[in-house]
Amino acid sequence: MIRKHFAGFAASALAMAVTAQAFAGTVTTDGADIVVKTKGGLEVATTDKEFSFKLGGRVQADYSTFDGFYTVNGNNADAGYFRRAYLELGGVMYTDWAYQINYDFSHNSGGDNRSEDGYFDEASLAYNGFKPVQIKVGRFDPEFGLEKATSSKWVTAQERTAAYDLVDWTNAHNGGMGIQVSGNAGDSLYGSVGAFAKDATNQDKDGDSTKQFNLRGVFAPMHDAGNVLHFGVNYAQRDLSDTAFDGRIRSRLGMRGVSTDGGQDAGTNGNRLTLGGANNTPAGAFDTDSAWGLEAAWAMGPFSAQGEYIKRKTQADDAAFSDIKSEGYYGQLAYTLTGEARGYKLGKFDGIKPSNKQIGAWEVFYRYDHLSTDDDNGAFANIDDVEGKVHNVGLNWYANESIKISGVYVKTKVDNAQNANGDDDGDGFVMRAQYVF
Image 1 (cartoon, rainbow, N blue to C red):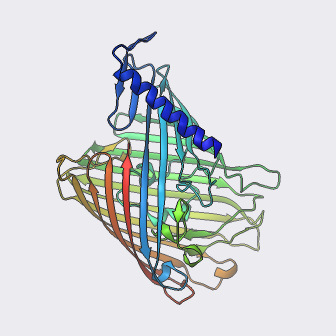
Image 2: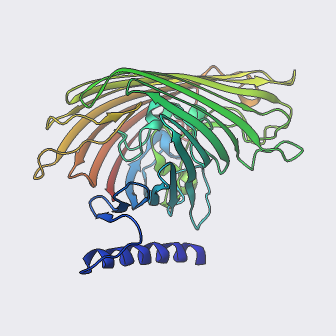
Image 3: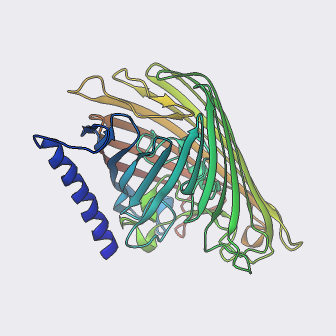
């Protein structure tokens, strides 16, 4: 608690000090002149661009209501929680070095049961002296997929595709550290490769952490807002040899409120789909866990379409176990009723900037998610593939460049699974109020 309050006090003191100087009659520096910007956070930079820092953040407050498969007894439940509550500090020093520190006070954007005092979502240092190549080290999420590459501020639906739940380890840092090299050739080609030591809860018998590497490549022959043609490929692999781990493949099926941090959820009545795997998977049961994915997107004016396909194989290392295979995909259509186009740059979509400051920008969308797992081990040995199907229909209102209000109706259907009440389908509705600064 002391650490949390100190961080907040330090940030506030820094902001007040800089603001006070900005309104003073005279500002004296011992180097280059400085420029202070207050639009979209607080940004201070030297005119020679050698040093800068920006203080910003995001708050996403959600409310959801749901029933059927989403609860154990099938009755209606609801949840109110902060999906994300970030304080972000980033900038440049000595021209070629960049830093980024994001602290999540909601302890809710990573895995379950984060520290009650929040945690560092990112703490990284990057070297840009080899432009267009960047070398980054520290704690940050690996790259895997178009939806993940796009900031949570500007993804179309409130939750990223449920298909990612099949490979949740591929694009989360899980409290570990890594190094990544990325680069681009103009605006048409982008690529990254990273290596990570992660997840202190999944160590081998010698205490060695899980090792992982990721690879992503993007080709975008059309790469301007409202004129996008995008293709991408991803690969990730981690070593599970001699490692005991939680091998459950589970999904909230687009309804975070069934089990979440940052506020109130459905508690013991919340229900998540288990597609395969087992908790407390013993060391030596599996060896290599690998996943690959394809991504594509097209945008023309206010219309955009995108999709991804993901395939995973967890390879058995013991004759008593069989390989676990999963695959998933999604397809999404979106249209901005007020005519604005989604932003796009270097392999990822960006936000929508309203052209009319009075009415803002209004966007409608539909997304279909499909995920399945084939597991011939344990409780799943005599069950056909467990599948989840999710329909998402929603409306986004970008009131301005800082405030976004969203609502989405979610309907799910599962095969070869049900809740304790015998339900194999469910409905839900999620509202979000987002403020970005």
